[in-house]
Length: 262
Image 1 (spheres, rainbow, N blue to C red):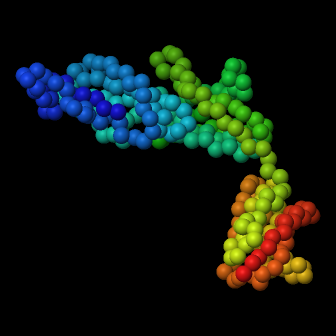
Image 2 (cartoon, helix red, strand yellow; image 1 turned 90 degrees about the vertical axis):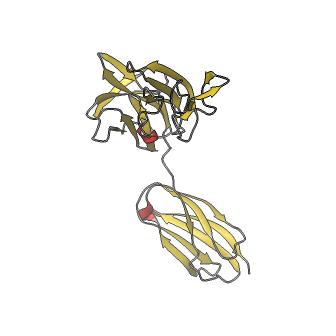
Image 3 (cartoon, rainbow, N blue to C red; image 1 turned 180 degrees about the vertical axis):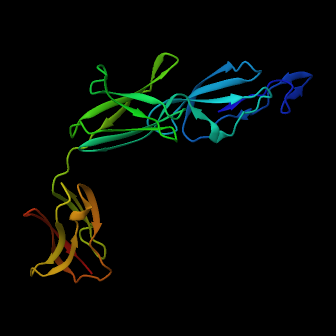
């Protein structure tokens, strides 16, 4: 995003005796991600404020602002560009909770967190205080696996409450014990196994030859609930033949076969 300098500034040029703007202007924002819909207003001191929609986080549109001094130059460096009122920092979701972090321009701000599941009926679900870095953090543990929820933050300023853009979060379903696949098949050196665990109880991932001899084994329960992918190779080549991968947890055993070639 660029802005021109006013006539009389050092970057101003004369073309045929007529004042002209510079050819490429002055950079106001060099962040990655698209910026659009700029608006400008006077700052009352010969300069101006420029605000624009900004999607640098790749999640939602937020409004950022930059002040231009009376000489036409940005009043502070590009990393001093500030989001106005509220910006989303990040979201994480697991089957039993959603964690969301916003940034506000002022520390110590107390804000209200709102939630909806249909985009129409918003309900206040809690309050949170901005920390010393301007971050407001909220953890919602009243979610259902597979549900979809919208969140926004309400910040009071000047007697009015300003609401952030809605952030929609898809809550993942609870993982089940599953042996998703083995690749490549046939294998030569590396053997990758994709699997999921519903919890952190003891579990093993093993490789057996057709005679029932254990060729590889890994303790995987400590990895916890989720989708995982593990390499069963340990640098020692296996003889060619047919093998069985077995995932065991809580008395349940799942198997897949694969072929090793040389």
